[in-house]
Image (cartoon, rainbow over all chains, first blue to last red; front, side):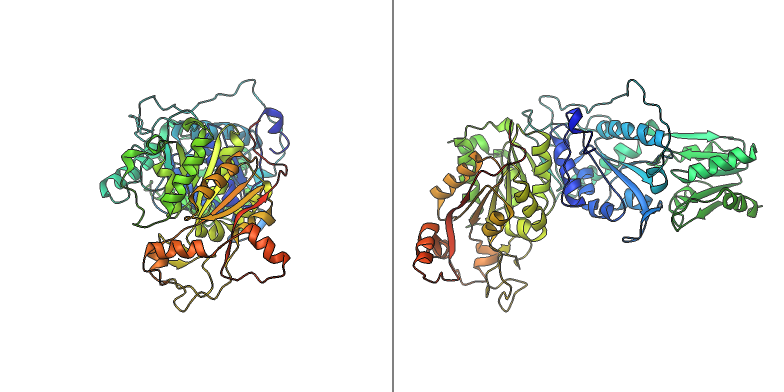
Length: 327
Length: 262
Protein backbone atom coordinates (compact mmCIF):
# COMPACT_ATOMS: atom_id res chain seq x y z
CA UNK A 1 0.00 0.00 0.00
CA UNK A 2 2.89 2.34 0.77
CA UNK A 3 4.10 1.88 -2.81
CA UNK A 4 0.77 1.87 -4.62
CA UNK A 5 -1.56 4.28 -2.84
CA UNK A 6 0.34 7.53 -3.56
CA UNK A 7 0.33 6.69 -7.29
CA UNK A 8 -3.45 6.35 -7.21
CA UNK A 9 -4.13 9.61 -5.40
CA UNK A 10 -4.39 7.92 -2.03
CA UNK A 11 -2.56 8.55 1.20
CA UNK A 12 -0.42 6.09 3.14
CA UNK A 13 0.87 6.76 6.62
CA UNK A 14 2.78 4.49 8.94
CA UNK A 15 1.51 5.28 12.41
CA UNK A 16 3.51 4.75 15.60
CA UNK A 17 1.47 1.75 16.76
CA UNK A 18 -1.70 -0.18 16.00
CA UNK A 19 -3.73 1.91 18.45
CA UNK A 20 -2.86 4.93 16.34
CA UNK A 21 -3.44 3.06 13.06
CA UNK A 22 -6.97 2.23 14.07
CA UNK A 23 -7.54 5.78 15.30
CA UNK A 24 -6.22 7.37 12.13
CA UNK A 25 -8.41 5.32 9.78
CA UNK A 26 -11.45 6.36 11.81
CA UNK A 27 -10.39 10.01 11.52
CA UNK A 28 -9.78 9.60 7.79
CA UNK A 29 -13.13 7.87 7.33
CA UNK A 30 -15.02 10.86 8.73
CA UNK A 31 -13.59 13.02 5.92
CA UNK A 32 -15.32 10.63 3.51
CA UNK A 33 -12.23 8.63 2.61
CA UNK A 34 -12.25 4.85 2.38
CA UNK A 35 -9.66 3.82 4.95
CA UNK A 36 -8.06 0.57 6.04
CA UNK A 37 -5.27 -0.83 8.17
CA UNK A 38 -3.69 -4.26 8.52
CA UNK A 39 -2.12 -6.22 11.32
CA UNK A 40 -1.54 -9.61 12.87
CA UNK A 41 -2.00 -10.92 16.39
CA UNK A 42 -0.77 -8.49 19.06
CA UNK A 43 -1.53 -5.48 16.87
CA UNK A 44 -5.12 -6.67 16.65
CA UNK A 45 -5.35 -6.72 20.44
CA UNK A 46 -4.05 -3.14 20.50
CA UNK A 47 -6.79 -2.05 18.09
CA UNK A 48 -9.63 -3.32 20.23
CA UNK A 49 -10.57 -0.11 22.08
CA UNK A 50 -10.80 1.94 18.92
CA UNK A 51 -12.68 -0.84 17.14
CA UNK A 52 -15.36 -0.37 19.79
CA UNK A 53 -15.21 3.37 19.12
CA UNK A 54 -15.76 2.72 15.40
CA UNK A 55 -18.73 0.47 16.19
CA UNK A 56 -20.23 3.02 18.59
CA UNK A 57 -19.73 5.95 16.22
CA UNK A 58 -20.79 3.91 13.15
CA UNK A 59 -17.58 4.67 11.29
CA UNK A 60 -17.00 2.70 8.09
CA UNK A 61 -13.51 1.17 8.01
CA UNK A 62 -11.71 -2.03 7.05
CA UNK A 63 -9.17 -3.96 9.11
CA UNK A 64 -7.14 -6.88 7.78
CA UNK A 65 -5.97 -9.36 10.39
CA UNK A 66 -3.69 -12.05 9.03
CA UNK A 67 -4.02 -14.42 11.95
CA UNK A 68 -0.98 -16.05 13.53
CA UNK A 69 -0.45 -18.36 16.44
CA UNK A 70 -1.25 -16.74 19.80
CA UNK A 71 -1.67 -15.87 22.58
CA UNK A 72 0.81 -13.02 22.98
CA UNK A 73 3.63 -12.80 20.43
CA UNK A 74 3.08 -16.50 19.76
CA UNK A 75 4.08 -17.66 16.27
CA UNK A 76 4.68 -14.59 14.12
CA UNK A 77 4.91 -16.42 10.79
CA UNK A 78 2.70 -19.44 11.38
CA UNK A 79 -0.94 -19.93 10.55
CA UNK A 80 -3.86 -19.75 12.97
CA UNK A 81 -7.50 -18.74 13.29
CA UNK A 82 -7.39 -17.93 16.98
CA UNK A 83 -8.91 -14.45 16.72
CA UNK A 84 -12.38 -15.44 15.49
CA UNK A 85 -14.04 -14.73 18.84
CA UNK A 86 -11.86 -11.70 19.50
CA UNK A 87 -12.98 -10.11 16.23
CA UNK A 88 -16.61 -10.58 17.23
CA UNK A 89 -16.43 -9.74 20.93
CA UNK A 90 -12.99 -8.26 21.60
CA UNK A 91 -13.89 -4.69 22.49
CA UNK A 92 -15.87 -4.05 25.65
CA UNK A 93 -19.64 -3.78 25.59
CA UNK A 94 -22.22 -5.16 23.16
CA UNK A 95 -21.84 -4.40 19.47
CA UNK A 96 -21.74 -6.20 16.14
CA UNK A 97 -19.26 -6.28 13.30
CA UNK A 98 -18.82 -8.04 9.96
CA UNK A 99 -15.97 -10.53 9.44
CA UNK A 100 -14.99 -12.10 6.12
CA UNK A 101 -12.63 -15.04 5.70
CA UNK A 102 -10.77 -15.53 2.40
CA UNK A 103 -9.38 -18.92 1.41
CA UNK A 104 -7.44 -17.90 -1.70
CA UNK A 105 -5.60 -14.98 -3.21
CA UNK A 106 -8.56 -14.35 -5.52
CA UNK A 107 -10.85 -14.14 -2.51
CA UNK A 108 -8.41 -11.89 -0.69
CA UNK A 109 -8.87 -9.50 -3.60
CA UNK A 110 -12.63 -9.87 -3.93
CA UNK A 111 -13.42 -9.80 -0.23
CA UNK A 112 -11.31 -6.68 0.29
CA UNK A 113 -13.54 -4.82 -2.19
CA UNK A 114 -16.60 -6.40 -0.61
CA UNK A 115 -15.39 -5.37 2.86
CA UNK A 116 -15.31 -1.70 1.82
CA UNK A 117 -18.79 -1.95 0.31
CA UNK A 118 -20.21 -3.56 3.44
CA UNK A 119 -18.44 -1.05 5.69
CA UNK A 120 -19.89 1.86 3.75
CA UNK A 121 -23.36 0.35 3.48
CA UNK A 122 -23.74 -0.65 7.12
CA UNK A 123 -21.43 1.97 8.69
CA UNK A 124 -19.49 -0.57 10.67
CA UNK A 125 -15.91 -1.82 10.93
CA UNK A 126 -15.46 -4.80 8.59
CA UNK A 127 -12.69 -7.33 9.14
CA UNK A 128 -10.83 -9.40 6.62
CA UNK A 129 -9.88 -12.33 8.85
CA UNK A 130 -7.21 -14.04 6.82
CA UNK A 131 -4.63 -16.43 8.18
CA UNK A 132 -0.93 -16.82 7.50
CA UNK A 133 -1.65 -19.61 4.98
CA UNK A 134 -3.67 -17.31 2.77
CA UNK A 135 -1.50 -14.31 3.61
CA UNK A 136 1.62 -15.93 2.14
CA UNK A 137 -0.14 -17.72 -0.72
CA UNK A 138 0.94 -17.03 -4.32
CA UNK A 139 -1.78 -17.72 -6.91
CA UNK A 140 -2.91 -16.37 -10.25
CA UNK A 141 -5.88 -14.07 -9.89
CA UNK A 142 -8.44 -12.56 -12.22
CA UNK A 143 -8.86 -8.82 -11.88
CA UNK A 144 -12.16 -7.69 -13.40
CA UNK A 145 -12.42 -4.52 -15.49
CA UNK A 146 -14.92 -3.06 -13.08
CA UNK A 147 -15.47 -3.67 -9.38
CA UNK A 148 -18.89 -3.08 -7.86
CA UNK A 149 -18.89 -0.14 -5.46
CA UNK A 150 -21.50 0.67 -2.82
CA UNK A 151 -21.14 4.12 -1.28
CA UNK A 152 -22.30 5.53 2.03
CA UNK A 153 -25.82 6.85 2.24
CA UNK A 154 -25.33 10.61 2.67
CA UNK A 155 -26.97 12.55 5.50
CA UNK A 156 -29.97 14.51 4.24
CA UNK A 157 -29.79 18.29 4.68
CA UNK A 158 -32.06 18.55 7.71
CA UNK A 159 -31.64 15.02 9.09
CA UNK A 160 -30.16 14.25 12.50
CA UNK A 161 -26.71 12.65 12.14
CA UNK A 162 -27.46 9.60 14.30
CA UNK A 163 -31.15 9.11 13.58
CA UNK A 164 -31.46 5.84 11.72
CA UNK A 165 -33.76 5.19 8.79
CA UNK A 166 -35.92 2.07 8.47
CA UNK A 167 -32.77 0.05 7.64
CA UNK A 168 -31.42 1.06 11.10
CA UNK A 169 -28.56 2.97 9.41
CA UNK A 170 -28.24 6.79 9.70
CA UNK A 171 -27.06 8.91 6.78
CA UNK A 172 -23.35 9.75 6.90
CA UNK A 173 -22.55 13.37 7.76
CA UNK A 174 -19.13 13.70 6.17
CA UNK A 175 -16.76 16.18 7.86
CA UNK A 176 -16.29 19.39 5.97
CA UNK A 177 -19.73 19.36 4.33
CA UNK A 178 -21.51 21.68 6.75
CA UNK A 179 -23.43 19.15 8.81
CA UNK A 180 -21.66 20.09 12.09
CA UNK A 181 -21.67 16.52 13.31
CA UNK A 182 -20.41 15.78 16.82
CA UNK A 183 -18.96 12.27 16.90
CA UNK A 184 -18.44 10.78 20.34
CA UNK A 185 -17.82 7.35 21.81
CA UNK A 186 -20.11 8.29 24.66
CA UNK A 187 -23.68 7.06 24.51
CA UNK A 188 -25.31 9.70 22.31
CA UNK A 189 -28.75 10.73 21.17
CA UNK A 190 -29.88 11.12 17.56
CA UNK A 191 -28.21 14.54 17.43
CA UNK A 192 -24.92 12.90 18.39
CA UNK A 193 -24.94 14.64 21.77
CA UNK A 194 -23.76 12.77 24.87
CA UNK A 195 -26.69 11.30 26.79
CA UNK A 196 -25.09 8.83 29.15
CA UNK A 197 -27.62 8.58 31.97
CA UNK A 198 -30.78 7.73 30.04
CA UNK A 199 -31.18 3.94 30.38
CA UNK A 200 -33.68 3.54 27.54
CA UNK A 201 -31.67 5.65 25.13
CA UNK A 202 -28.54 3.59 25.79
CA UNK A 203 -30.39 0.29 25.42
CA UNK A 204 -32.06 1.42 22.19
CA UNK A 205 -28.77 2.66 20.72
CA UNK A 206 -26.80 -0.51 21.48
CA UNK A 207 -29.69 -2.70 20.31
CA UNK A 208 -29.79 -0.80 17.02
CA UNK A 209 -26.01 -1.11 16.53
CA UNK A 210 -26.33 -4.87 16.90
CA UNK A 211 -29.62 -5.26 15.01
CA UNK A 212 -28.51 -3.30 11.94
CA UNK A 213 -25.89 -6.01 11.34
CA UNK A 214 -27.58 -9.12 12.76
CA UNK A 215 -30.88 -8.43 11.00
CA UNK A 216 -29.07 -8.02 7.69
CA UNK A 217 -27.08 -11.23 7.97
CA UNK A 218 -28.68 -12.84 4.91
CA UNK A 219 -28.24 -9.72 2.80
CA UNK A 220 -24.51 -10.12 3.25
CA UNK A 221 -24.26 -13.91 3.77
CA UNK A 222 -21.67 -15.45 1.48
CA UNK A 223 -21.25 -19.23 1.47
CA UNK A 224 -21.23 -22.29 -0.80
CA UNK A 225 -23.31 -25.42 -0.19
CA UNK A 226 -21.80 -28.55 -1.70
CA UNK A 227 -23.60 -31.91 -1.61
CA UNK A 228 -26.62 -30.77 0.44
CA UNK A 229 -27.95 -34.36 0.75
CA UNK A 230 -24.82 -35.61 2.49
CA UNK A 231 -24.85 -37.24 5.92
CA UNK A 232 -21.43 -35.96 6.97
CA UNK A 233 -20.79 -32.29 6.45
CA UNK A 234 -17.63 -30.21 6.72
CA UNK A 235 -17.96 -26.59 7.74
CA UNK A 236 -14.87 -24.46 7.11
CA UNK A 237 -13.66 -20.91 6.51
CA UNK A 238 -10.26 -19.48 5.58
CA UNK A 239 -7.18 -21.69 5.20
CA UNK A 240 -8.79 -25.02 6.24
CA UNK A 241 -11.17 -24.66 3.27
CA UNK A 242 -8.25 -25.73 1.11
CA UNK A 243 -7.76 -28.99 2.99
CA UNK A 244 -11.47 -29.78 2.82
CA UNK A 245 -11.41 -29.05 -0.91
CA UNK A 246 -8.57 -31.56 -1.26
CA UNK A 247 -10.58 -34.19 0.64
CA UNK A 248 -13.65 -33.54 -1.53
CA UNK A 249 -11.49 -33.79 -4.63
CA UNK A 250 -9.83 -37.03 -3.52
CA UNK A 251 -12.97 -38.74 -2.25
CA UNK A 252 -15.61 -37.59 -4.78
CA UNK A 253 -18.15 -38.92 -2.26
CA UNK A 254 -21.65 -37.42 -2.49
CA UNK A 255 -22.16 -38.37 1.13
CA UNK A 256 -19.60 -35.80 2.24
CA UNK A 257 -21.07 -32.33 2.28
CA UNK A 258 -19.30 -29.02 2.59
CA UNK A 259 -20.46 -25.67 3.85
CA UNK A 260 -17.72 -23.16 3.12
CA UNK A 261 -18.31 -19.78 4.67
CA UNK A 262 -16.91 -16.42 3.64
CA UNK A 263 -19.02 -14.16 5.91
CA UNK A 264 -18.25 -15.70 9.27
CA UNK A 265 -19.78 -12.83 11.28
CA UNK A 266 -22.69 -12.34 11.38
CA UNK A 267 -22.86 -16.13 11.26
CA UNK A 268 -25.26 -17.38 8.55
CA UNK A 269 -26.79 -20.15 10.65
CA UNK A 270 -29.61 -20.93 8.19
CA UNK A 271 -27.01 -22.30 5.80
CA UNK A 272 -26.57 -25.23 8.17
CA UNK A 273 -30.23 -26.16 7.71
CA UNK A 274 -29.62 -26.73 4.00
CA UNK A 275 -28.01 -30.05 4.97
CA UNK A 276 -31.26 -31.80 5.87
CA UNK A 277 -29.76 -35.28 6.16
CA UNK A 278 -26.75 -34.20 8.17
CA UNK A 279 -25.90 -36.59 10.98
CA UNK A 280 -22.80 -34.69 12.05
CA UNK A 281 -20.96 -31.48 11.22
CA UNK A 282 -17.15 -31.57 11.09
CA UNK A 283 -15.42 -28.28 11.77
CA UNK A 284 -11.68 -28.10 11.09
CA UNK A 285 -10.24 -24.89 12.51
CA UNK A 286 -6.78 -23.56 13.33
CA UNK A 287 -7.89 -22.91 16.90
CA UNK A 288 -9.41 -24.96 19.73
CA UNK A 289 -12.89 -24.93 18.23
CA UNK A 290 -14.05 -21.32 18.32
CA UNK A 291 -16.61 -21.43 15.51
CA UNK A 292 -17.52 -25.05 16.26
CA UNK A 293 -19.17 -23.75 19.40
CA UNK A 294 -21.15 -21.22 17.37
CA UNK A 295 -22.30 -24.02 15.06
CA UNK A 296 -23.33 -26.18 18.03
CA UNK A 297 -25.79 -23.47 19.03
CA UNK A 298 -27.68 -23.86 15.76
CA UNK A 299 -27.90 -27.62 15.07
CA UNK A 300 -29.34 -30.60 16.87
CA UNK A 301 -26.88 -33.17 15.50
CA UNK A 302 -23.35 -33.65 16.87
CA UNK A 303 -20.69 -31.11 15.95
CA UNK A 304 -17.21 -32.56 15.73
CA UNK A 305 -14.56 -29.92 16.30
CA UNK A 306 -11.27 -30.72 14.56
CA UNK A 307 -8.92 -28.27 16.19
CA UNK A 308 -5.35 -27.81 15.11
CA UNK A 309 -2.75 -25.64 16.76
CA UNK A 310 0.90 -25.23 15.87
CA UNK A 311 0.79 -23.21 12.70
CA UNK A 312 0.20 -25.77 9.96
CA UNK A 313 -2.96 -26.64 8.04
CA UNK A 314 -4.70 -29.95 8.71
CA UNK A 315 -3.59 -32.66 6.29
CA UNK A 316 -6.35 -34.32 4.22
CA UNK A 317 -5.54 -37.53 6.09
CA UNK A 318 -6.32 -35.86 9.41
CA UNK A 319 -9.74 -34.77 8.18
CA UNK A 320 -10.51 -38.22 6.77
CA UNK A 321 -9.46 -39.78 10.06
CA UNK A 322 -11.88 -37.48 11.89
CA UNK A 323 -14.67 -38.40 9.47
CA UNK A 324 -14.06 -42.10 9.88
CA UNK A 325 -13.74 -41.92 13.64
CA UNK A 326 -17.33 -40.72 13.79
CA UNK A 327 -19.49 -43.70 12.78
CA UNK B 1 -16.50 38.02 17.90
CA UNK B 2 -19.84 36.54 18.78
CA UNK B 3 -19.45 33.42 20.87
CA UNK B 4 -23.00 32.38 20.11
CA UNK B 5 -21.99 31.70 16.54
CA UNK B 6 -19.47 29.07 17.58
CA UNK B 7 -21.28 27.35 20.46
CA UNK B 8 -24.02 24.76 20.44
CA UNK B 9 -26.54 26.64 22.53
CA UNK B 10 -28.68 23.52 22.78
CA UNK B 11 -25.96 21.73 24.72
CA UNK B 12 -26.03 24.06 27.70
CA UNK B 13 -25.58 23.77 30.63
CA UNK B 14 -22.03 22.46 30.27
CA UNK B 15 -20.35 19.98 32.61
CA UNK B 16 -17.57 22.23 33.89
CA UNK B 17 -17.42 22.96 37.62
CA UNK B 18 -17.83 26.47 38.99
CA UNK B 19 -14.45 28.18 38.81
CA UNK B 20 -13.00 25.81 36.19
CA UNK B 21 -10.34 27.34 33.97
CA UNK B 22 -11.24 25.37 30.86
CA UNK B 23 -13.93 27.81 29.67
CA UNK B 24 -11.33 30.57 29.55
CA UNK B 25 -9.08 28.47 27.33
CA UNK B 26 -11.94 27.43 25.05
CA UNK B 27 -12.96 31.08 24.65
CA UNK B 28 -9.40 32.13 23.83
CA UNK B 29 -9.12 29.34 21.27
CA UNK B 30 -12.42 30.17 19.59
CA UNK B 31 -11.54 33.86 19.55
CA UNK B 32 -8.31 32.99 17.74
CA UNK B 33 -10.10 30.67 15.30
CA UNK B 34 -12.64 33.42 14.62
CA UNK B 35 -9.88 35.95 14.02
CA UNK B 36 -8.41 33.61 11.43
CA UNK B 37 -11.67 33.95 9.52
CA UNK B 38 -12.04 30.18 9.36
CA UNK B 39 -15.48 28.89 8.52
CA UNK B 40 -17.32 26.41 10.71
CA UNK B 41 -17.62 24.03 7.74
CA UNK B 42 -13.85 23.77 7.34
CA UNK B 43 -12.80 23.62 10.99
CA UNK B 44 -12.68 20.35 12.92
CA UNK B 45 -12.18 20.02 16.66
CA UNK B 46 -10.77 16.73 17.93
CA UNK B 47 -10.28 15.59 21.53
CA UNK B 48 -9.63 12.55 23.68
CA UNK B 49 -11.06 11.92 27.15
CA UNK B 50 -11.20 14.16 30.18
CA UNK B 51 -12.65 17.53 31.16
CA UNK B 52 -10.74 19.41 28.44
CA UNK B 53 -11.80 16.87 25.86
CA UNK B 54 -15.47 17.65 26.37
CA UNK B 55 -14.89 21.04 24.72
CA UNK B 56 -15.55 20.01 21.08
CA UNK B 57 -19.02 18.81 22.07
CA UNK B 58 -20.00 22.39 22.82
CA UNK B 59 -18.71 23.82 19.56
CA UNK B 60 -20.86 24.06 16.45
CA UNK B 61 -18.52 22.43 13.94
CA UNK B 62 -17.79 18.87 12.92
CA UNK B 63 -16.02 17.36 15.89
CA UNK B 64 -14.52 14.07 17.02
CA UNK B 65 -14.56 13.17 20.73
CA UNK B 66 -12.40 10.07 20.74
CA UNK B 67 -10.77 7.55 23.07
CA UNK B 68 -8.46 8.38 25.94
CA UNK B 69 -5.09 9.63 24.75
CA UNK B 70 -5.67 9.01 21.06
CA UNK B 71 -6.95 12.38 19.86
CA UNK B 72 -3.73 13.14 17.96
CA UNK B 73 -3.86 9.82 16.10
CA UNK B 74 -7.49 10.44 15.07
CA UNK B 75 -6.62 14.04 14.12
CA UNK B 76 -3.71 12.78 12.03
CA UNK B 77 -6.16 10.63 10.06
CA UNK B 78 -8.51 13.57 9.49
CA UNK B 79 -5.73 15.93 8.41
CA UNK B 80 -3.91 13.46 6.16
CA UNK B 81 -7.14 12.43 4.42
CA UNK B 82 -8.26 16.03 3.87
CA UNK B 83 -5.55 18.70 4.30
CA UNK B 84 -8.09 21.40 3.35
CA UNK B 85 -9.66 21.06 6.78
CA UNK B 86 -8.33 23.07 9.74
CA UNK B 87 -7.85 20.70 12.65
CA UNK B 88 -7.62 21.88 16.26
CA UNK B 89 -7.10 19.43 19.12
CA UNK B 90 -8.21 20.05 22.70
CA UNK B 91 -6.50 17.86 25.26
CA UNK B 92 -5.39 17.76 28.89
CA UNK B 93 -2.26 16.76 30.75
CA UNK B 94 -3.44 13.22 31.53
CA UNK B 95 -4.84 12.63 28.04
CA UNK B 96 -1.82 14.02 26.22
CA UNK B 97 1.16 13.22 28.41
CA UNK B 98 0.21 9.93 30.11
CA UNK B 99 -1.92 7.57 28.00
CA UNK B 100 -1.33 9.63 24.87
CA UNK B 101 2.37 10.38 25.37
CA UNK B 102 3.53 8.23 22.47
CA UNK B 103 1.10 9.83 20.01
CA UNK B 104 2.19 13.27 21.28
CA UNK B 105 5.88 12.80 20.49
CA UNK B 106 5.17 11.20 17.13
CA UNK B 107 2.74 13.93 16.06
CA UNK B 108 5.45 16.46 16.99
CA UNK B 109 8.05 14.44 15.09
CA UNK B 110 5.90 14.28 11.97
CA UNK B 111 5.26 17.99 12.47
CA UNK B 112 1.76 17.40 11.16
CA UNK B 113 -0.24 20.56 10.59
CA UNK B 114 -2.40 20.55 13.73
CA UNK B 115 -2.87 23.05 16.52
CA UNK B 116 -3.01 21.44 19.94
CA UNK B 117 -4.33 23.32 22.96
CA UNK B 118 -3.54 21.50 26.19
CA UNK B 119 -5.46 22.54 29.28
CA UNK B 120 -2.97 21.50 31.93
CA UNK B 121 -4.71 21.37 35.32
CA UNK B 122 -1.94 19.11 36.66
CA UNK B 123 -4.39 16.44 37.76
CA UNK B 124 -7.05 14.01 36.47
CA UNK B 125 -10.03 16.24 37.20
CA UNK B 126 -12.85 14.17 35.76
CA UNK B 127 -12.02 10.80 37.26
CA UNK B 128 -11.41 11.68 40.87
CA UNK B 129 -8.29 13.77 41.20
CA UNK B 130 -5.55 11.23 40.53
CA UNK B 131 -2.02 12.52 40.03
CA UNK B 132 -0.98 13.12 36.40
CA UNK B 133 2.43 13.33 34.69
CA UNK B 134 2.39 17.09 35.32
CA UNK B 135 1.39 17.05 38.99
CA UNK B 136 4.13 19.12 40.68
CA UNK B 137 6.38 17.50 43.29
CA UNK B 138 4.84 17.62 46.72
CA UNK B 139 1.28 18.25 45.51
CA UNK B 140 -1.58 16.24 46.89
CA UNK B 141 -3.89 14.16 44.74
CA UNK B 142 -6.00 11.07 45.39
CA UNK B 143 -3.09 8.87 44.28
CA UNK B 144 -0.39 10.99 45.94
CA UNK B 145 -1.91 11.43 49.41
CA UNK B 146 1.56 12.07 50.91
CA UNK B 147 2.61 14.45 48.17
CA UNK B 148 3.70 13.67 44.62
CA UNK B 149 7.24 12.28 44.57
CA UNK B 150 7.64 11.94 40.81
CA UNK B 151 9.28 14.49 38.54
CA UNK B 152 6.68 16.17 36.31
CA UNK B 153 6.93 16.48 32.54
CA UNK B 154 7.71 19.82 30.95
CA UNK B 155 5.28 19.42 28.03
CA UNK B 156 6.71 22.38 26.11
CA UNK B 157 10.28 21.10 26.28
CA UNK B 158 8.96 17.72 25.20
CA UNK B 159 7.15 19.20 22.18
CA UNK B 160 10.20 21.23 21.21
CA UNK B 161 12.57 18.29 21.51
CA UNK B 162 10.20 16.07 19.52
CA UNK B 163 10.06 18.52 16.60
CA UNK B 164 7.01 20.80 16.87
CA UNK B 165 7.19 23.99 14.80
CA UNK B 166 5.49 26.21 17.36
CA UNK B 167 5.41 25.90 21.15
CA UNK B 168 4.15 28.33 23.71
CA UNK B 169 2.93 28.29 27.30
CA UNK B 170 0.55 30.60 29.14
CA UNK B 171 -1.98 30.28 31.94
CA UNK B 172 -5.67 30.96 32.42
CA UNK B 173 -4.62 34.35 33.85
CA UNK B 174 -2.96 35.41 30.58
CA UNK B 175 -6.07 35.65 28.43
CA UNK B 176 -4.83 38.08 25.78
CA UNK B 177 -1.43 36.44 25.50
CA UNK B 178 -3.03 33.02 25.20
CA UNK B 179 -5.42 34.10 22.48
CA UNK B 180 -2.54 35.57 20.53
CA UNK B 181 -0.44 32.44 21.02
CA UNK B 182 -3.25 30.21 19.74
CA UNK B 183 -3.62 32.46 16.70
CA UNK B 184 0.10 32.21 15.92
CA UNK B 185 -0.27 28.45 16.36
CA UNK B 186 -3.15 28.35 13.90
CA UNK B 187 -1.15 30.42 11.41
CA UNK B 188 2.00 28.30 11.68
CA UNK B 189 2.23 25.40 9.24
CA UNK B 190 3.16 22.20 11.05
CA UNK B 191 2.59 21.10 14.63
CA UNK B 192 1.67 23.89 17.04
CA UNK B 193 1.50 23.20 20.76
CA UNK B 194 0.00 25.65 23.21
CA UNK B 195 0.02 24.68 26.87
CA UNK B 196 -2.40 26.56 29.10
CA UNK B 197 -2.01 26.01 32.83
CA UNK B 198 -5.49 26.11 34.36
CA UNK B 199 -6.95 26.07 37.82
CA UNK B 200 -9.07 23.06 38.84
CA UNK B 201 -10.81 24.03 42.07
CA UNK B 202 -12.62 20.71 42.44
CA UNK B 203 -9.78 18.21 42.09
CA UNK B 204 -6.56 20.20 42.50
CA UNK B 205 -7.28 23.40 44.39
CA UNK B 206 -9.33 21.70 47.07
CA UNK B 207 -6.47 19.39 47.99
CA UNK B 208 -3.67 21.91 47.64
CA UNK B 209 -4.68 24.83 49.86
CA UNK B 210 -6.24 27.02 47.18
CA UNK B 211 -9.35 27.91 49.13
CA UNK B 212 -10.53 30.33 46.47
CA UNK B 213 -10.41 29.95 42.70
CA UNK B 214 -8.72 33.33 42.55
CA UNK B 215 -5.97 32.08 44.90
CA UNK B 216 -5.00 29.48 42.31
CA UNK B 217 -5.16 31.89 39.39
CA UNK B 218 -3.04 34.32 41.42
CA UNK B 219 -0.56 31.49 42.07
CA UNK B 220 -0.31 30.75 38.36
CA UNK B 221 0.23 34.45 37.65
CA UNK B 222 2.91 34.89 40.30
CA UNK B 223 4.69 31.70 39.32
CA UNK B 224 4.83 32.57 35.63
CA UNK B 225 8.27 33.58 34.47
CA UNK B 226 8.44 35.29 31.09
CA UNK B 227 10.79 33.55 28.70
CA UNK B 228 12.66 36.80 28.06
CA UNK B 229 13.24 37.26 31.77
CA UNK B 230 14.27 33.62 32.13
CA UNK B 231 16.81 34.11 29.34
CA UNK B 232 18.20 37.23 31.05
CA UNK B 233 18.47 35.37 34.34
CA UNK B 234 20.30 32.51 32.64
CA UNK B 235 22.68 34.97 31.01
CA UNK B 236 23.36 36.55 34.37
CA UNK B 237 24.02 33.12 35.79
CA UNK B 238 21.06 33.32 38.15
CA UNK B 239 19.27 30.21 39.34
CA UNK B 240 15.74 29.67 37.97
CA UNK B 241 13.43 28.78 40.90
CA UNK B 242 12.01 25.27 40.49
CA UNK B 243 8.42 26.28 41.10
CA UNK B 244 8.30 28.78 38.22
CA UNK B 245 6.60 28.12 34.88
CA UNK B 246 8.34 29.66 31.90
CA UNK B 247 5.67 31.35 29.80
CA UNK B 248 5.75 32.93 26.37
CA UNK B 249 6.64 31.84 22.87
CA UNK B 250 9.17 29.07 23.50
CA UNK B 251 9.72 27.69 20.00
CA UNK B 252 8.96 29.06 16.55
CA UNK B 253 10.55 27.55 13.50
CA UNK B 254 9.62 26.38 10.04
CA UNK B 255 10.78 22.81 9.71
CA UNK B 256 9.16 20.78 6.89
CA UNK B 257 5.64 19.78 7.89
CA UNK B 258 3.07 17.15 6.92
CA UNK B 259 -0.58 17.58 5.98
CA UNK B 260 -0.30 21.27 5.15
CA UNK B 261 -3.10 22.64 2.95
CA UNK B 262 -1.68 22.74 -0.58
